[in-house]
Length: 357
Image 1 (cartoon, rainbow, N blue to C red):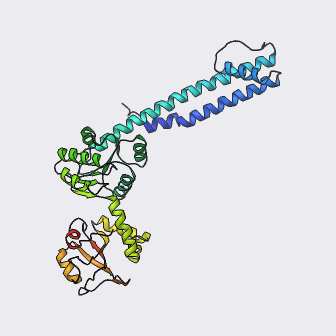
Image 2 (image 1 turned 60 degrees about the vertical axis):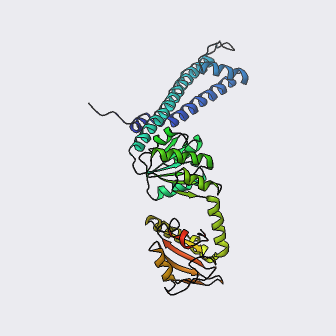
Image 3 (image 1 turned 90 degrees about the horizontal axis):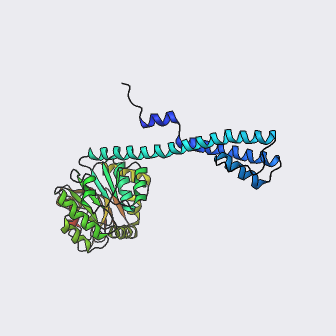
């Protein structure tokens, strides 16, 4: 038994539904315009000509507005019937084809997407496709990571699917939606909705469905951080706080900020580091920091391999690239570091002022 043609092959045989519909409408309108012109040239006024052509093309048959008793008028009418009705039949068929093919595309596309999601394992579930979710999905896609977007807004869902992402439309606070996204097989959940209460509820639900899940939650208010951690989040991200630190970095360490973020080459370098599980950041050495007065070698030894220091920016503006191990860190210095998850581990213990980026 020969294999059935796929949907793409069927489209090729039938032609583009949109193109067929456009051609059919164009042909029918052209026939109607020529028929109206012919009736007008035969002595009819424009209103009667339009009325006669519309009735004829749509096969209504209410009767002629004027007697069709000459050879010319009969020829015009016969031509209008033959070509006009043929055009309308073609338009009707193209319209049915257009609707049917689009419905089939949606059905097969949805089934294919669900099949791909069911096959995922150790993937990332992104709850929310707003500004933060869009950037996150883009970076994960660039890093060839497997992920599923869970979004409630239909417009955002269509946008995500247009970009080629696996995206389900549903309420992330609903456990059934989380299960449909494969939360029980997922490695990480990132809930980045702009609603703190929703993020807390999603964290609670996801933790109950997958106790081993690594949960990264967004918080708008600093007071929400504790609630998210109590709900089961492993990490909490405060975008407003991070944005403020980025501004402070640009004010305090302008040259370093430009060095880190100011060129396409550095952005490419950051992507390479990220693919290796490394991060590059600039942090402030506040006067009360434990590292103040220590040498580079002492700080790196205390970090136990979590990061290493590649540049020191003095408060006076001097930038020391490739500092020697015996160089001491002074209050107010900007310390450029490269490390593995430095923010999550070593920085909280060594830099009381926290990262500036």
